[in-house]
Image 1 (cartoon, rainbow, N blue to C red):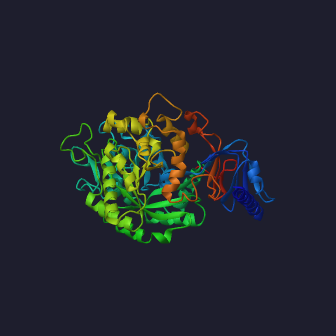
Image 2: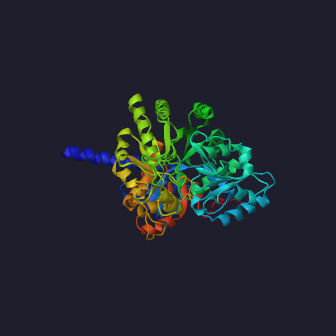
Image 3: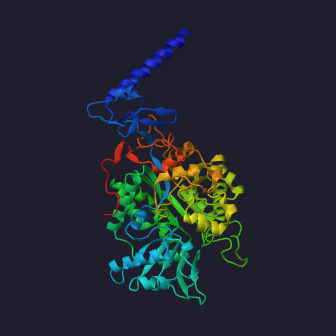
Length: 570
């Protein structure tokens, strides 16, 4: 026993000597002191970072050995330090470009929309496109939303406005003509052209029909796209987002993001998902050449499937059971499943065999089931070992499908930014599905309880803000930011600890980076943030107002609230 004790004591002394030697070898680049540092084992006071790696976590004494003449020492004065946050579903270029467009507030009334479009038209050259959004179908009276409405306020310009979900669009007559959409145009596969009593297009286009219109709009120039993506990335850094997935990429977008990442202008760790549909040759070519766009912080290994639409008045989310009140012969009684199951099965099996990651847009429970069935087919065909493919949104999930995800190594990706009382949920979604289904809207607690990995994605700019603190609060309260009397799916509340883990550890795990980031401990890369509020100590209804003071990626200070970069359109 004495010999064992001597050996153990000798080992401890040797470890201490090795640690001291390691510290003396090269001082830390950055030391954070006097903070409230959240670690997997509790709270610490200080962090030391060298060459982008966390080399010490503890009290002031623990990091003192790493202090050198060239070390930057920051006194946090009690501020909280957390791991960097992961947003697993954003649209970076769209978010940036939308800020330069003809936008108006969510829920804007018809008169407000008319005034805004008229204003945009007055500043545009004759014949120039006017694009923007985001309208809410529920604000219009029956038949009020039509092409003539927009013709009147912008008679000399083609106009196209996206709705709150970005799954429907609204065009005037000039835009319809340029896109070649007439009364004789058939509904595209997976889309609907709304028509009046005489069969003429009203101007409202659903899903694939909206995409047809978008392809007619001139692509922004490279300079405009670079400026937009840079602005949006900076805004995410200002919210503490150090890692994200761009959930819908085409070839031109891929080039822009790859270039900005490679040049170090976009700082975050990114994953890009190529939008794929049956017969899309451009998507197939982009998937084949994906490796040429990858950078050290940009993964190009993801394929995106748009399986359905949204559960609003459009009735385009694919459901297991018919929407309440729909007629038996209504072609959209159960929504729209955009990729037939046999084609989906074969595509998922093929991409899974290639080692690619897949993200499924699945808002309705019918689409969620189709995605799970396809992954089950891939596992049976290819065997175990594929990526932890991602079910995105999951606004509604049949109870029978909740326990199926974990055995298939599937990840639930929920959208917390729209699960509290908002016009899109309280009005549009409620009218479409009824009160009973809304009780289980975005069932995140059920996902956690099943043992599967659970992550979150903002879907920005489909939602007006990329603020993750708003999301963290409302996943805990299921109420409007700041609290309120109304809640949506109160039984699906999670704890603050669960919410933070979802945004940090779980997101890093899905990105395949959990060995490097997701927690603050020795040996991890220094993707960390400093915030003015401790979410574990303030009232839950105050979390949405959290302000980020500093954001670090690989130890580099990439956002400093005391000296911020431009964060608005100049």
